[in-house]
Every structure is written in structure tokens, then in C-alpha cells.
Length: 60
Length: 162
Image 1 (cartoon, rainbow over the protein chains, first blue to last red):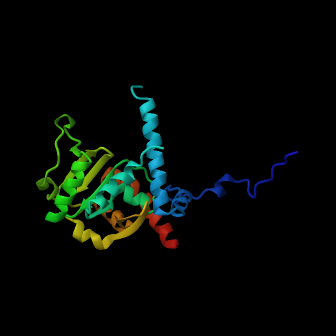
Image 2 (cartoon, each protein chain N blue to C red):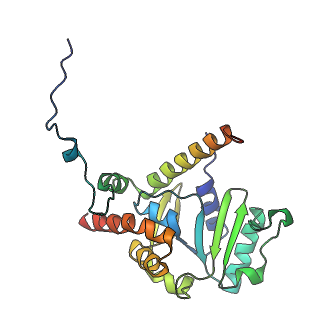
Image 3 (cartoon, helix red, strand yellow):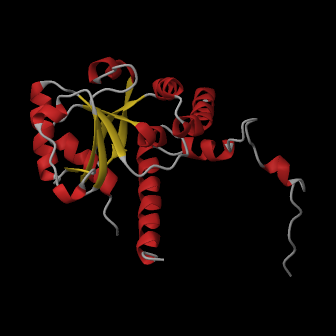
């Protein structure tokens, strides 16, 4: 039987980290953990995905 | 696998020996800022030799002005030697060539404020550093620039923490 482990904390707010001006610092740290080449690759994948979705929905 | 159009554009410029500095949203992304961007902004050297090399690359990329697309206007050497901004469309997508940015800052002035980054596939490019990107956006103070400033500032802070 699978028993889910209790999370270390039950407060979701403690699992986020926003700056006072609302910037998601966890996202920045994730980006900084990548190399410039990986950042470019990630951006290109996102851009290609968005273009594909736009093409699929052209005219709507 | 879809074509990697951003890197294809940068590769074309590098292989054409064009001197340029990447600025704008893509420069921010490469330095870790989680912002969305769809075009490539570069400040190019306006030296005669570089203008000639750039023009050859633009010809190969079938570059045209995005304004009045029906006229299919090509950028010429005098456009490329000007301090203005050229909003082009190429076979790999939008490419903006900026003679100067901010207070008449051209390639020579910006070069000391750039960093060289490895973007994969054996390519290394000069990218305007985050500090200067932020300073320029603060100076411009347009709505679009103000919107992205908090992300750039926080990225710089996190970057400095190491």
C-alpha cells in the first residue's frame, strides 16, 4: 500500500519565494542554474511551441 | 525537430565575421532572466568593413524591412551605417539592427560593457551585461522597459549572490 509521506511543511507559502515587487525568485534561480546554451535552447523550444500553437489556431 | 532559428541567425552573423553585441530580451535570457522574447536585437559596428560583411549576411538571410512588407525593401549600406534602428524580417525571423542605443551608444562604447558567452554549437557571442541592460532600460523608462526591470534587477541580485 502506498502511503504518502507528509510534506516537511504544510504551508505552501513557505515553498515559494517572491521578491517584494512580485518577482518569482525560484524561477530566476532555476534559470541561473542553466548554462547560457541551455537557456537559449529552452527559449527556442518555448518559442517553437508557441508558434506551433499559433499556427494550429490560425484564424480563430 | 524544429529548426533552431535564433541560433541560426546568430551563427550566420558569426560566420560572416560580423562584429555585434547582443542586447535586448535575448541578452537578458542568456544571462538568466526569465523573460519572453521573440526577436533578436543587436548593436552592430558601423565601420565600413563591418557594414559590408553585415550586408552580405543580410542578403543571404533575405532580410527585408518589416514595415511595408509588400515593398520587400532591403537594407542598404547607408541604412546599416546610420545610428538608427532597422526592424528587419529574415528567413529565420525578426532581427533588429540597432546603430546606437540609449544616449548614442554604439558598438565601440558598449563593447567594454559586454560579456562573451558560449551559446552552444561552438558559438561564442558578445552580450551586453545585465548591469548595462538595466541602466539603459531605466533611462528609456518606456512602459515595456519598466515592466521587465524588476525581473532584471532581481536576476542581477541573484547572480551576484552566486
